[in-house]
Amino acid sequence: MAKMGMAIRLKPEMVQTYKQLHAQPWPEMDAALKAAHIRDYSIFLKEPENILFGVWVYVGDDFEGDMKRLGDLDVTRRWLALTDACQTPFDTAAPGEWWSFLPCVYHLD
Image (cartoon, rainbow, N blue to C red):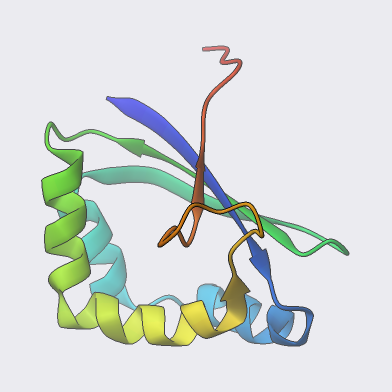
């Protein structure tokens, strides 16, 4: 089990669209996330800076494989076509990096 955090910027003109998408997420997208061993997934929004922070617990044993399978699904591609249009990576993101994964510096159970 691993708790993971990530962040990305939200385009100011897309804040309401992003909120609306996540107010009624597709059940098949939620099911795909669960099948990829993702649990307790939340996305927080810091306004007015429009920074999204996502955190989840990964309960599988092959994160790269699970993320590959998740990314190959049609439902994931359709969902990301909508949500990616709302986001922009940080200027400091590595080449090819969309959401920036954040190392945990403190945790309290």
